[in-house]
Amino acid sequence: RDRAILSFHLNLGMDLEELKAFFDDYPELYSDCPSLVTRLLFLLHDLEFPKKKLIKLFQSDPGKMATMLMNDVEQALQKGKENNKETSQVLDPRASRKNKAFQALHSHIGMDQEAAEKLLAEFPELYEICPSLVARLMYMLQQVNLSPEKLQFMFKTHPERTVQMLMRDTEQKIKGSVAILQEELQMSIEEIVSGKLWYVPRNEVRSRIATLKQYFSIPDIKKVVQLEPGLLGGGRHPKTRKALTTSLSRKESDAQDMCKIFSTLRNELKATDEDIFKMLENYPGVFLESADRVQSHVEFLLYGPVGKGLGLVLRRGITTRNAETESEAQEIERQRTLDLLVGTPILTITKNLVPIVNYLQSIGCEVYDIGRIAYRRPQLFQYEVESLKFKVDYFCKELDMSEGNLPGNAHVSRTVLDLMATMPDVFTFSIKENIEFKFQYFREELGFNTTALRTIFSNRPQILCLSLENNVIPKIEYLLTPIKEGGAGLTIEELQRLIISFPQGLRESLNLRIQPRCQAAIKQGMKIPDDLPNNFLTMTESRWSTIVFSEIPDSKKGPKTTIKTKKVASSKKKK
Image (cartoon, rainbow, N blue to C red; front, side, top):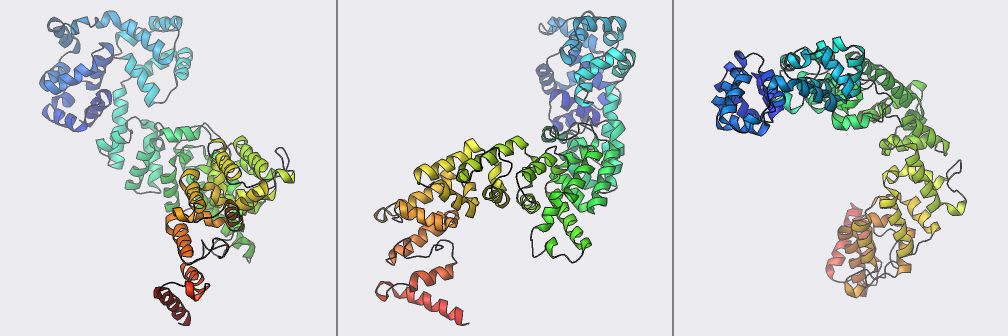
């Protein structure tokens, strides 16, 4: 019953609930009818019965459809010829089957005319006995994941064996995989359909499930295989397939590879079952890669500059610099490398990892810098070297031209290296669509020169991550708007001094911090920025209250509420 429901859903795109009701009313279709799936495919592909008409018949007269499928298909359609003009246009199956088989070989796997005619002449059973060559070819292409070139090669080198494979009933293959999933993982037909798991190879699915059961519960396995059918040997999820085109190996993994990957993570990183499951959730494609490649990447991350650099970074008061023994330092590096891979598991397979690390070292990045990058933006290790080099050269040109650090030099100045280590997110943005406009705005609209820009962006590189249109420009416009018009009333020179002396202020909220504090200072008769500290936008509320209400003449202090605020502050201090 489930196999029949699944076949109709896949081939006709019909609703599962409608199909369940249909087969509940006509159980003989799956209990007595021989090869129901073959009959359906015969209708669709060999007799070219329109799919829409078949669905319409199903919805309007399900009894008639059941009768047609139960009786001999050719006789049912022969009856239809006499009563239906459209059906009468359908060609005689036996007369057209050879031509259909030729078209299937030519259109689906690209076989040339001479080779296709030779194959059909040598093996006439492909169109005389095989109920639907199109359906069999599509099964091999889409569900077994054979390429058209591979199928052509198989027909050329081992034609007899390949024909025997096609002549087998693919219905039994689908039945086997569905039955295993229902038996081993207690999956419903809805879960199998939604996860596109109906076509996973029967010879692999059982061994892969056994491997996963060693580490995870059945509900957890169901969850991850629906995210990534490739874990059971089926076709990979589109996102995984795209990402794996950048991996080191194109070799498909098997159940034995999965075991080796689990062992590598346990032995090298002491990963727990919970760690491995989080990796599966974050990026299950890792476990579809060659085990040897994963192991080499794990070892490079753990024992190379990335792992050493992660250990050097001070986090929660811990760093390998303070480790008392070598084993303690190694434990810090191991735990931090594990945390890195649990959060970004794709680093175990990306082909760009080693080239990017080598490039960073070649331009002068120290191990500590690489560790900071790994902490803040590990995705940078997935970039192509040429892409990252283009961005590094751009920043050298914009910030360090006066120092002679032009593109092509062996080493890059500390200004750019510190920018990369402090805020690597900046190097993930597009130069032409993002960064270039920001430099242009600060130069042309605000009048900053290269030296000023170097000071601003080296002190607070986060400014480059702010949206120009939605964040930076509204703040600048408010600060430059005259007081009479509701702004802060700064001149362009005052604005330049404010930003250079304390660029952090641009990161504060316009509505919650910049505007309220500027208005409070103006109300108290203070001149911005001359009468205020450079950090007046970032200081705490208590400190701000003390500044704005105490460092002014008594005549300008305003209402008594101001004095009350001062007393509250002093009483807290006394406590």
